[in-house]
Length: 106
Image 1 (cartoon, rainbow, N blue to C red):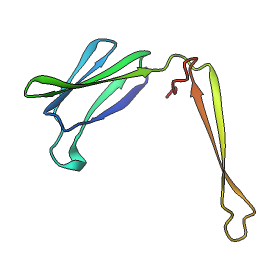
Image 2: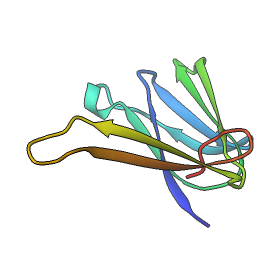
Image 3: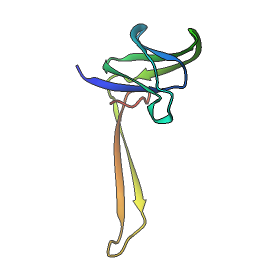
Image 4: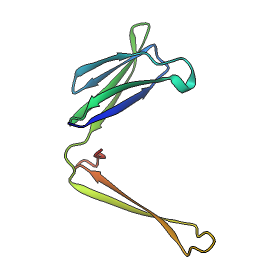
């Protein structure tokens, strides 16, 4: 299956990541602003991804993210950019795969 990087940024002592209730381990973020991330390589599965932050061994924050189910629709958006020099118009067209609950499919 697809393995995706999961980053959690925290100023806690350590963070534990769970996928569908199963621990994927703990990691300790750095203390400098650009090193405060924890990283896990996670096999993609439908369900719930949860990060729990601890300070002095006590839970201080819990964050839950619902991973998507199989995609069921495509969302497309168009953004017109200001014309530059010889261009009449420029556009950014974005397409996203979403599941039936509007969760973004990776």
